[in-house]
Image (cartoon, rainbow, N blue to C red; front, side, top):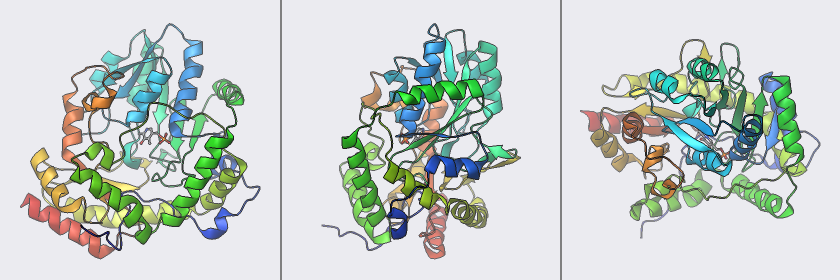
Length: 402
Ligand SMILES: *Cc1c(COP(=O)(O)O)cnc(C)c1O
């Protein structure tokens, strides 16, 4: 039986919690992040998905004749689950060829009289083209929800992401940077819409059982989120899932259909606020590490590393790479996925290709999204991936692409 590795880099750079940050306190997470980002007040929900679901319910009540939500065909399966939970229908928008943004033409065609909202998505911390989505949405009378689940701290032309559209949300799930195990922050530019979201929040119940569970999970995360603990908590199940031939489980894409909906308790809000004090410096260190490593990767012929559009400063939880074809991508993963170096994949499939979502996702043909899923991989930007490990990854990619 293969033994667990002593060290394992996490696939994304999370902010490790410190012992002292686990003490209770009066600091409030949403207030602290609001101050850091310089946005209107953020609203804390129990997950990014719950934040999205709450938003969809509020918008649906305002425009019940609009049952359709337009999302990129390559995104987190939880987005599809939330749209279905809200009693709405998905319309998939294919991607620009080889890119994470939605294709502008497909986007214009997808936004119609029946469209409630469009979800431009800041994937991998990269800043998405929200302007094109806003233009398409406005023409159809639809709202824009920026999915910034992976991009807390990202800025576009001087302001936080989430403010060019009508609503934005960030995720505080384990593995997404700052984490309280599960949590989501909601942002709305317009005061009236913000008040409507706050009113909807007033109806979110407390749930002692869920809060206890999340609190224990957060303690577990605090204990295990270090190189040795990750070998056990991340590396072992990853290898087991890949041996079973189940990549969807390997990256945790196999989400339950139910979406917990409850208030986040005072202890987790305080822990998150304590850790958040270190977030700006952590994000800066990650950006510096990415800035040093991206050029090395770009010198490898055949590697495309995604960067930000002009005027944008994204965050760098991991580096997102596109390779020339599925064969080279798969060959690279064969050598690197279980090497303990934090190399992984983002979402395994385009949304129509998840068998378990077949009842909730329309059977649309979205070839660019499928191609994107087949040709991309991710490299952790955790500080625990040291230069030597990063160089091993680069050499391996050079070998595969030679
Ligand atoms: C993780 C994620 C979500 C959902 O956020 P949770 O906090 O995990 O519920 C939504 N969209 C994208 C792109 C994500 O990566």
